[in-house]
Length: 445
Image: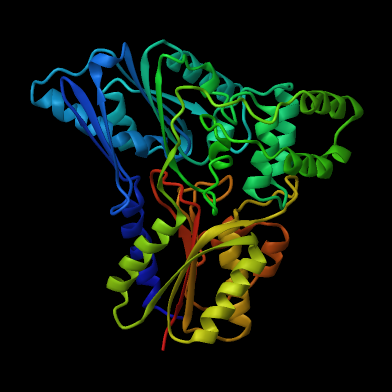
């Protein structure tokens, strides 16, 4: 067992997570808002004159929404402490997932009168519908400035389905437990939900201004699929959506199939470009997470070369982790960092508890243990702080036995396997960032 890695890996993820917070720098005065976003050198700077707007709405949607709006809370708190006036027409709203919400963020945002709502994830609920309607109502006032920060999870946390909510929930459950990619999943959801694919924008008056800032959890950064694009006027991938629907319809009743297909038949290719539309700005992405993780690993393990692979991975969890480990072993001693998004297909009735990152770590640990390679450590981590429907972000392993691992894999029960193992452990973080997933493989000399 690599005892040194049992110290290095937990410390790595404790120091890594804060560096992945969305790069948002606001400055608020009595006359304007100056907003800088994005990692240098691709930083964006927007200036908004307050007198041009009857109201200013700053909205965070998704699992990284609280992190996105925290810089505004800090700036507004600073204004108050200096005795400066806070614009009376400034409104802050967050729609988040309850278990990705750090108490510190909640307290700071509440202190500046930010309204915080919680939708459900990965399956939408009445709370998700309420959240979507609240966002629509806030942004529907004329001559308003709407700054919208979108991150992964928005598809479920804000929802206005065109079919019955129970049926939409059932279809969503089938989708998220399938082997379909997030792009394929969201292509269908965008046709069955009026909040998505520009749906939010369509309710904003033409006299208003809309700016969208995106934290990408999609490996190709296609804005149609990040949160299902509620403010993004893009042609929807109807052909892809129909292919996904074909894989589900046999599991639905005749009346359910009829209800879905009645909606699919009347969908237009797009909403048309709203005259106040501005192209969304992607302010952070998975490659940023890879770069940040690599930088920290260079400081933690100076005796090893660090290799940052910016080509994102996709595919099933087992194929992804096997390819990454095989490549690392072929190249020899070093640290290998890669990001992307894998998939796991499982039976929701199996009783197992886990996520794709915990499962990838377990698959890799079993593989390396069979090869008797105790000089290799691995960690797989979801940057949003949640791996599947759990409170853990992933898992790490630093050598040693994995008795019972294959049985746990069969039940998709990796959470309980890693809990208190001693030769590996779960990764926990607070506050969502949501730049998809990271895999780290460390091959010692």
